[in-house]
Image (cartoon, rainbow, N blue to C red; front, side, top):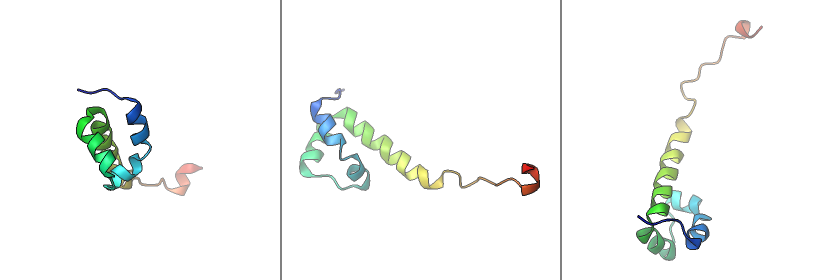
Amino acid sequence: MTFPTQDCERFREDLGSWIDGDVSPEAAAHLAGCDACRDLRHEARRVARAVPRAGADYVAPEPEALV
C-alpha cells in the first residue's frame, strides 16, 4: 500500500480529467504505482456515475401539504 505524496497533490489537481478517462502518460504512470490515487480515482468515478441518478425517485409534496 502506498500513501499520498507531494506528487499525489500535483496529479490530483487533474482528478476531473481522470474521471473522464483523460489521463496523461505521466499521470498514468503515477496511478500505476500509487494505491492511494488509484483508490481516489475509483471512488470519484463511482460517485460521478451515481450523481445523475441522485434524487431520481424524489416525489414533490402536493402543494396543499405545504400550507
